[in-house]
Image: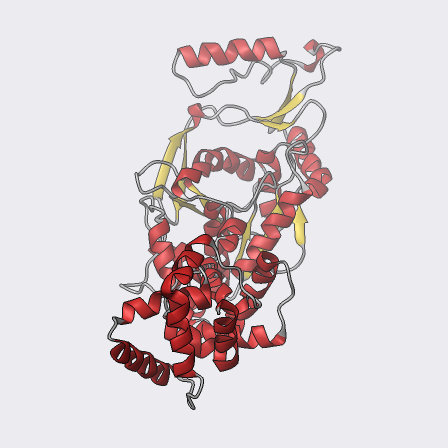
Amino acid sequence: MSEIITRFAPSPTGFLHIGGARTALFNWLIAKNLNGKFLLRIEDTDRKRSTQEAVDAIITGLQWLGIDWDGEVYSQFERRQRHTAVANELLAKGMAYRCYCTPEELNSMRETARSKGSSRLYNGLWRDKDKSMAPRNISPVIRLRAPLNGKTTIEDAIQGSVTVSNETLDDMILLRADGTPTYMLAVVVDDHDMNISHVVRGDDHLTNTFRQIQIYKAMDWILPIFAHMPLLHGQDGSKLSKRHGALGVDSYRDLGFLPEAVNNYLMRLGWSHGDDEIITQEDAISWFDIANVGKSASRFDITKLNNLNGHYMKKCDNDRLVRLMLPEISKLLETKLTPQIESRLKDGISDIKCKVSTLIEAIDKSLVYCVSRPINYDAKALKVLDGNGREIIKKVRANLVNLEQWTVEQLTEAINELAKKSNTGLKNIAQPLRFALCSSMPATGIFEVMKVLGKDETLGRFDDVL
């Protein structure tokens, strides 16, 4: 087999959609598994809709997922002269022709074709006309001279053998009237010139592939291996959309998902390796085979992604988690965190990460360690503390001030002893204790909070209340 080269070729008209991210991932895994290359090509021929912001979002999204590419980022638009040259070569070979149809004529053809239930919307009016009949006031388009009969078959690496009748494929436009190449021409020329061995994309491109094959054949070019993946669906079985949780990759990052969790989840949408659910990127590279991608649509389940992310949160290195959380915490508190607070956060993250599913939840439970004294007590906290809460805090402080070991075990024992001496339930002590230390901020177990805050900070917050 010649060199394996795959590609991801998104249009820069918006964010990197989660379905596009899966396509990129599968192409990347094929290349890595077979010691090949993975290329990134931005299909920016649609100049009105293409934006640099979208290009940046695609690149940032791929980098966040850990998907790298070989060489430069290619721009399809910058290769337009090459696309035009191929169209003119087809014209010279008699495999393409100039079409002078007016918009009114084209509309009439389409209406007639649709009324007959035909998918061939252009009737080939200028296919065999002599150029002497060409009107002078109309700039022509260049159309491919597609076969009128016979069949075209794709031996698809996922779908299997798929055949269409050539009479359903009309003479598609290669160059527009203004001389600009169409996507259908550009994608074939680029894939050929870049020696793409595998074209792996969504099955919504299957019809395009049958049409694009005609260009390969007209140019006597070798066909790549085609593989069309079923599109992602929502839990209700309908096409995936925002209401199912289908967002841009950047949104999943902002929602607190770890890239390795998103990677793992996307791998399992349509591809499997036995019963393995937790699959590292290294294992996926070793195991991936396009033959194991299913023909049926996979259903995107945000709950499963949350659960998987929870697993990776528990496994994540503490220092890395804190690095990911610090910028957002600083933004929320509108202040730069001191080294002491950062150290406190590192002490608390081991317990927090075992009780949350996302970084956002971890940040929420970490704020109690990051706020500076005196903390802001909301109405709910003040209501509890203004009752007999302060008396309870006074007793708790007196019971803890001489505690030699500031551990969860020693703190638990000391508070339990106070509950017995005071002839009151632990719950009656725990509530004002939690409000004194945390106000209404979410937190893990109160004894864990006290341990992480340390003796000086804990007693200091008691003093602020008193």
